[in-house]
Length: 232
Length: 390
Image (cartoon, rainbow over all chains, first blue to last red; front, side, top):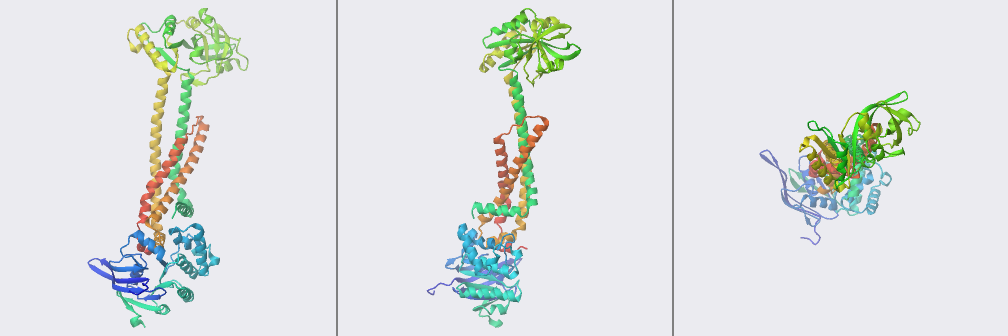
């Protein structure tokens, strides 16, 4: 093991689904490690297992077998509540469909992770405002998602992912619901964040987007291939 | 997530769907207001009845003679001998008849009661002007009368009845006193009657013997002793035939009133619990719909770090806030309803803080009880499945 442990360390991880008599291997003995400061793109067609991998990395689901260390903690044997805490502390999610709460304002959406972290109100307010400022939405603080454009909504989602200062940002098709121009803006933002030291794992099916990452990993039929393989 | 945060979230979620929230609360509002209105009116009328019973006089015992064979009444002298018993303070025998009383060209049908001077203390019934009957009136069969307020107004209008003369069965009687206003109590109005000396009444009504006796015990503690002394004496008079007389005491009447209201309260609580139960099911129903509608929200919250407990508390608080607000509205509507019905029907209203607290507490408990199942359902959702929900 190196002096500095990788942020993400996956070892012989499998996820099996029982479909009637057949067993489907969504992930087949995969291993992966991601270091601090990395910008990794995971690329694969639909049905390749990339959503399953995303759920594993994001601690939203537990593997059938194998080990997973996240920031030095072994997470594959944790209870639901412990996983919730890991998600809260270690991971910032950016989803394809933004997944903002429609009844809450941008500010309220951004402060939500801090509420579950039991951060006191005053500090919460400062952090949420700072995070919104970072993504350039300081003037849209009290708007509801419906009053914002798609790009602005995704930037609120980025602000929400950033607010708790998690070691990893996990982006699942972050530009999938956006047009090319705003999609580019969001990617620019992510680049910028990576330069500032945030570790980013981006999941996409689009090679042009994947190419903007430092490192590309291809996934097909539940197996991982380093450096893109046939795609490049 | 702390409780204040939870209440804030619950309030904002309730406020986004005001009509639905109101309709959901309606069951609780109706239940709580029904309890408060009915119990307040029930307690008010109980208080009224109790006051009327107590208005008959203090430590009062009533003896009614129904008779045995040819002996259908007691002699006045025998009745007055009851006064010698240790627990008995005073004895007021009564002979009464409904007769027509005339003054000038006015006729009134009223109850005329022949009694003695003790009546004043036994029945706690005094004159406001003039004088009460005196022992001497009884002794000399004086043709004097006391008049009740309503009858006085009917016969004399605004003129002072004291000193006037009325005809009872054709016999002239001088009014010597105007009775105080007492309202009605058990056994009819106290203000529509005339009181005359018992000896005079025996003459005028051409009857002999007493069938009704009011007796006052010395102290409330001695009421039971007085009753047993009376029963011993009466049993001797009627040779052990217990059907020839009846002895009531005020305590018995109060107890029977209380047992009736006890049953009433029990029935009301039953009805109230049923309506609160129905309201609770309504809350559970709406909460289940809400959990389904907000599956995606729950998924997002879980993805960003909400624990099972956080989601459980959020939905539980929402259900408690719904039922609690329903309870508060119910209290307001219930108090308003009781005052309204009370003023329309002239029934006294007695609000009991205990009942109000109980109704409110019950509505909150309904919220907890019927909120647990939906809240638990929400909290147990798997984050990936909830996120995938459209």
